[in-house]
Amino acid sequence: MKRNDIRNIAIIAHVDHGKTTLVDQMLKKSGTFRSNEVVEERVMDSNTLERERGITILSKNTAIHYKDVKINIVDTPGHADFGGEVERIMNMVDGVLLLVDASEGPMPQTRFVLQKALKTGLRPIVVVNKIDRPEARPTEVIDEVLDLFIELEADDDQLEFPVVYASGKSGYAKLNIEDEGENMIPLFDSILEHIPCPEGDENGGLQLLITSIDYDKYIGRIGIGKITRGTINRGQGAVLVRSNDKQVNVKISNLYTYEGLNRVESEKATVGEIIAVSGITDINIGETLCSTDKVEALPSVKIDDPTISMNIMVNDSPFAGREGDYVTSRHLKDRLERELLSNVAMKMEEISSDCFKILGRGELHISILIETMRREGYEFAVSRPEVIMKKTEEGLLEPIEILYVEVPEESSSVVIEKISIRKGEMLNMEPTGTGIMKLQFRIPARGLIGYRSEFLTDTKGYGIFHHLFDGYDKYKGEIRARNRGSLIAFESGTAAGYGISGAQERGKMFISPGTDVYEGMIVGESSRLEDIAVNVCKKKQLTNMRASGSEDSLRLTPPIIFSLEQSLEFIADDELVEITPKSIRLRKKILDKNSRQKSQKK
Image (cartoon, rainbow, N blue to C red; front, side, top):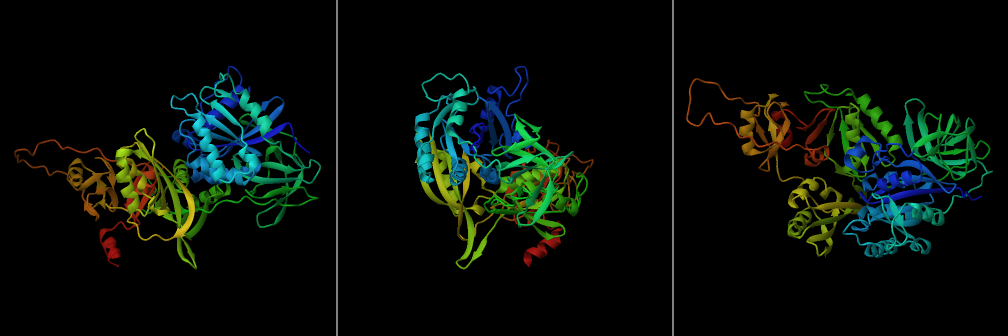
């Protein structure tokens, strides 16, 4: 049976190529919103962090109606660190809209998400977006996209991809670049014409693979997936086949379909529909819902292995418990286990009762979790990110990344030098003719930890930096983590201007007068290779003696304020980042100076 009244598509693209803005226009032009309804921009980016950072983090579902056809749309992240979100939804759709910027062309993340779609056998439609930009070059971009398809070994049907030219910001699409852009109808017509409709046996036993998990504080866990076979009814009994092949009898309490941005309660759904079910308390991604008379599990979602690990532990600093609501190991463990249920690309290992190792795709992948927990009221400490090595008969293997860099030509030599120090090998150098140099490297993943801030400094903020996982290779040797030590608080107290004035002569400061500090807390970056203990709490002694020049006002340099990602990049192996809902502090693992020196000698 073919469901001609349904199309299921995913929208994939590089970061900032306009996926979410295009979905906005598809929702508006399809009549999903009332004419007088106020709709905010990037309406699909419902997560606060997504709005702040301007990136999509979580895959989300929506649906529109066009010519009596329901088009289910899945908006996916464009960053490779959230590749797990892309991989797990590929089984839910029958085709993809590949968005490519009309100026930038295919970018590193374009390659990543497209490769996943082609391997799954999905039919693509290429949408050249932002054609209204002055620097747009749509014809050349189409040629570059075709080269990418060939390089990724697309089959003959996938190589015959249709092309739609669009401006998500202006809200129009067209099939020929010379045409006038009026509305989104050419894009809708292309979806109906080129995206296959879902097929399956409507009268067979139910098969539904759970590919996403949502949570509602009133109805609990919600499983989301596409019906591959059969029909599902509200209130019916079913069998849940777990990932370990264990079978559990369950009941479908509520059944939902998607209409616009909302989940709508439904009594019945059949083959091809993307639906959500509730009433199963411990349902997980990769499990299959089957009818009681025909239990056949579908293959589970295949997710690439994580490449970065980081320890999350109970905060034991002198300021512990001051600012956080959830501070115990039990709170941390419960929250991390809850994250694993929906974040399929993340794994956890319990190191001790107070320390947990989190394994993820990259620094951004884990830092988003840390920032989310921080905003929820959790307080904890995290260690420096480490790459995940593999021990084999051939020796020690480490993860390797392909690094894509765009820098001003005058900065290219220093960037090449810095990357070579980090064991990077240049693969390609391409001048663009506009004063920008495109560079491509193959570099160990650990060589990228802590490099982003240095890269932005070297390129005066004009550099662009992307990387993709390329596999495992032989260990490349030692890489120096940092060429500067830390300035460490000598004692606990409140930082004073006089103490900071003396300390800033030895490096760059991270704090300002009035900041509470404790012994072992990192208050700045040393100008030397070794750590230096400084007394930032020192105050000027008051006397009745006056001396020439002693009354001059203090000249304090503004402190460097690190973001969460910058803090994780900065710390060394013997340092931690203390995370609270109100503060981000850097500290030594061993706070006492004498104990720290004894440990270093050992």
